[in-house]
View 1 (cartoon, protein in one colour):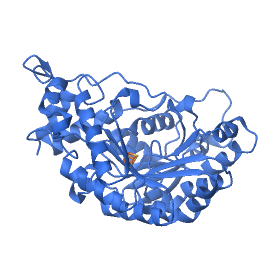
View 2: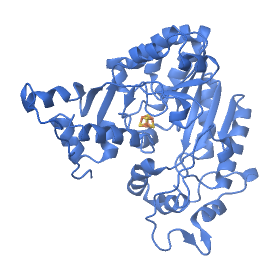
View 3: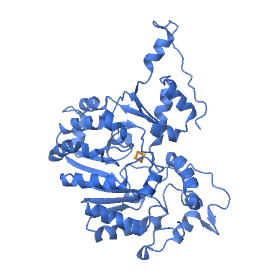
View 4: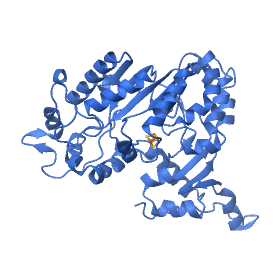
Length: 399
Ligand code: SF4
């Protein structure tokens, strides 16, 4: 639980505030934009909306119109940024009563899904940043990609109401020659087909639809508030019918849960039929913010896998080399079969430029859990996998 995290905020000057403390404090509050069932939306004024490669640590620029994401995927790695925003709002004494109560009582992983910050000024800020002749704009024209949705989904439910992503696209539509990528799980992206078509005529545009399983029941468990797999496949089809380049991110592949070869085969077949221009895959990486949510989730929902996950990810944020190599070989073969471009990240050599390895911080393993005989957990997992040429991706007895 969040515990007590009240800030030490205080006045620095000796002069009494003109309108009194209550007024001064009220004027600092993050405005509530609205509520939707149990989700609360707050306006936040971004100082910068286009984060460059030097900030992201990755080889592209990123835009995230929202902080927090109502889709609530158990494996989501983006929760850390939300925590930072909450902590900063608390230390600046900018939380109204409801947000403050959530901050005090809600675990950070849940606050990420229930308190969404809307960067309402992002489109205007982007328009200023991209004005012709600025250094940033020149860099983008040299071919550096802009990724919309690198951290949170730009078409999550908030977008239906606040339309920040759409207004960002309107700005980008006025700037030819860009390389733009969008990642989403939502069919709401098809609302913007008019704009996307316009952008696609003079910029390099690609939409990545995230889809890790076709099984509706499983998706509901793993990604509780995300659109159904069928809705995502339909969205893919509509984008392709409109002539927009769109493919599938099958990421993350969850060992023992979504790695059944026949399920993955059916997924590749289905999205190839819907016109996907590519299928990309990557095995789950468990960095610190994702571990805090995902491992307890596994213990609760897939208790038979708990020890295996603890073992596998005890010493690294990645699954073992043989497992990743097996998955890459499987995807290459399956994509060939259904005549769709495919790739899978297999090793750290495949990582995006600048991507850093994070030291494992999860060190709560108990005696005997990380070793089977003299083997580490990761080695033990690798041995359960058949070699790639006789591939059985699913962990033995995992379901
Ligand atoms: S849709 Fe993406 S950003 Fe949103 S919770 Fe799921 S993984 Fe996280």
